[in-house]
Length: 174
Ligand code: FE
Ligand code: FE
Ligand code: FE
Ligand code: ZN
Image (cartoon, rainbow, N blue to C red):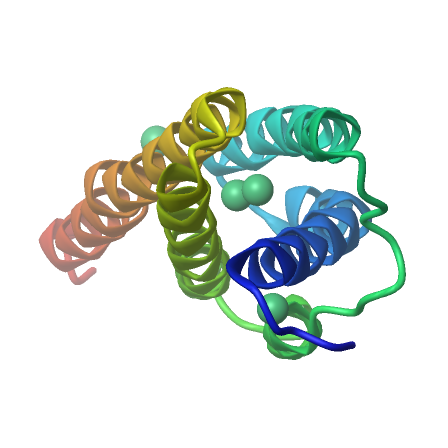
């Protein structure tokens, strides 16, 4: 595609995000299934529902700017999800599986955070205040999802695994 103005560039960025989110709607259910820990399962399920709304939000932006968002594939998200697939095939302890899922999911969130941050900066520059507002909502959801994943990994996955190891050590030897 020809990108000669900031408007073109914003459209290109929005198309990339639209493809990324659409790929996620398909991929997240597999992560929910693979997660062992209930908090993790729930968090990814919740974010799946949010992700569906984020797709709708991008569609609203498309109507707002009178542009089509289809026709581009986000290759980076394709790659991140390819890596995530490896994680889903991992055979290991629940804590290792969950921690690997979190690692893959956080890479996804960080990619989204940077994409939405850039798009929002451009929309701001171009003076599209309604678009800025919509992108900010999604950006905040992505940041919150990332924080939730960090919280689950430290407070549940790692903490519970450490406790289990400790309990094993305290078991009588006979
Ligand atoms: Fe998203
Ligand atoms: Fe991309
Ligand atoms: Fe996300
Ligand atoms: Zn827990």
